[in-house]
Image (cartoon, rainbow, N blue to C red):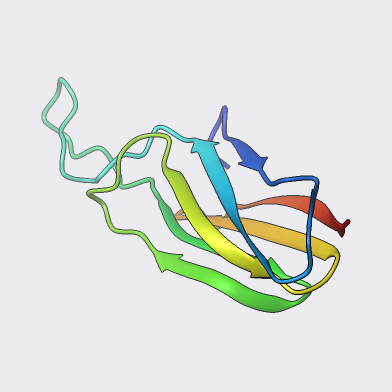
Length: 109
């Protein structure tokens, strides 16, 4: 597991049924492309978040595959339609097999 990895998510606390909301996510991760070398000339192993998913009440909203050119601390902003109250599940997958998760609930009001 990479050190210092911290997911952050911003979802409105409530919305009207059928509203389209904006979701923002950021994960603190150093992201190493695997193409740089250290001082001794050895290749620094690749270490990136290689996939991000977001589900709402068990249905997929976003599924993104990331490549080595992704920046440090990847930020995603996207929209989702909220048909009912429920829970968003956010998952980030690391090259080393680690999985980072966050959940946020939204109410209909």
